[in-house]
Length: 435
Image (cartoon, rainbow, N blue to C red; front, side, top):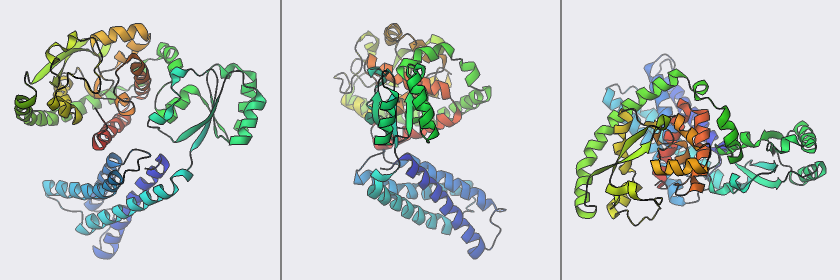
């Protein structure tokens, strides 16, 4: 629908609009001090809830489907108003005025509609970074960026190889006016390229290494840099003990809530299995966890052969014949993943982290990708950065692409990134694209 700069703008205007409505109510209707009343705290919560639903329901960048766009514009304000009303009802303190809730709903709907119309009308005119890449960039870096969700909007104007001259670079700048120059480690050793980069930098062009470009614009790390970085990376220096304690506390609290969902689902899935998925309710499978320690992962059974799943050598495909009709439904709704809350409570998994793989695949990928074992320095998760950024992995090439995202997560691991992953997971569930 819109690029990230316009998306950020809508978050700001919605927050400002709700604040202005609160000030208007305090000054002209309720006649009270705006900042000293408990209403102010509820209003901040209303803003947070509104921004949450706007983010979750926001259509995928570039989506032109009328239904998903209109649902986003209409449903986000309604869910925000309902959520804040239910919360006030539960705590028994309806301090947020009905005026603010109703007016906030109408104003949010209007603002989102305007942003949508602006995005549709001027989508191609918004600022998109024009990028020139220099160096021996391999095909494995996967420069077909259109298939990925970008962290920042950009287009590649050209990829110049290591033998590109100073004049070639400068002529291309005059023709295309690119504003980002990306240099891989081979390019950084070329005097001509350094000379061009210095001149371009003085004219306002941003200079990035290939690693930084992938990090900022794609949320991943380039294949060619993974092995080098894996030798220098120390997780102990990157993650604070406070973050680990807070994450574990959140894991336990959320898992307890999900356990209630799990127990409610058990009789429903049991009945469904009678009609279209005969066999055991749950299945367990050995997966590799933190520090390469194997553990049993739990899921609702979705395949005819899940009792012997470890005996199959092939990757599970999107249309795998072993998946039953009921199993396909459970996978589509991600209900099959719910029993993993047991693993989270046991400390074998966390809510957010790299997905745990089967022993046979770990052995295979470790032989083909030398730095693959680095993903096991952190606790595996139910969802992860690679899952929200890349499609379902069903080959060695897919695993190579996914580990680039997993290294990004390991490198930037934080509570903020975990929240971002959870929010994007909910986005995928809403869009119906996940598997």
